[in-house]
Image (cartoon, rainbow, N blue to C red):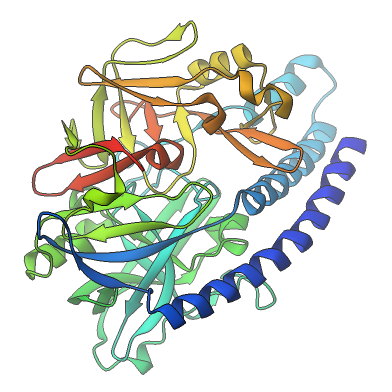
Length: 438
């Protein structure tokens, strides 16, 4: 209880301080971008490709730590309540502790057909999408780990708070291009469902790619997103996966953009800034964002999630055999099998928390060994110091254990990996390109 109250006190104070700082920072950034005309831009690459750029805003590491503290508080409170209600005995109480430090998620096709693989509490990057005529703007997570577009609708319940992170809500009555659909939509998250109905309207990416008659979901209840949504800076999700994992088999926004001839190449690429904003490019990629002249292309194992095969994963004396991973812009962490992540965390002196994440003494950060993913015979290494998310005196180990039933992926390469490697997603080619980011 003493530990719980200490964390709660830290969390409340940190949220107030960091929220004020972040608010001022975002206001300054908005003014600067307006004056400089940098919100979106078309550009020619060195290969004379026409690409369309979109800024990707990054939630600060300070804010990320605040989210962790809130989530940890909730887990501790839940554990305390459950612990006190359990029969006396070490076995039952130990089982509770074990359940809180292991995450087991079901993929689509396993438990629920429309079950998503994460709760977005770990998402750090978001950008703008416009819907309707005239356009209504929304901040969304551009997520390669899912395939549907959804935003909250006017009258949505459990859709944030007016005093903090108020959500923009879609109003069909304000759009002359809205077309009624009415088909029910629902995605099951770990904590509950997000539900609404489908509609059609014009969806615009980066102010230049206007996808007509795009089917998307308007959400009237977002309770399933929990605190990750209430305290997040995003209004909705825009999935960049394949149609095969889209709820209801709906064609994705990017697939429709290809069909309507709105992009020069069937590619999009992420450049994720390290302690700064990033950039999402549609219609090609930007050679100035990576070292060297060429990308290394890796064929997909499956065109569902962006899933690839890997030769091995290694850090210090730990190594795996052949395995696989999905490359996922919608989560900031690296995830892997719980047993493997636990062994890695123990080897560097990290301590498990109730939420399944790990903390480490900040004085040990410089001694963390580099981690390497070997893909098609090529090593992709992330320095040990980059495996940490730090705020003040708290350091989170940016790995988390997740166990997916077959045929689900073994590993998720999230933003921690993508910050180090410029990543290009080739939709028609069913491949991913990597190069060391500048």
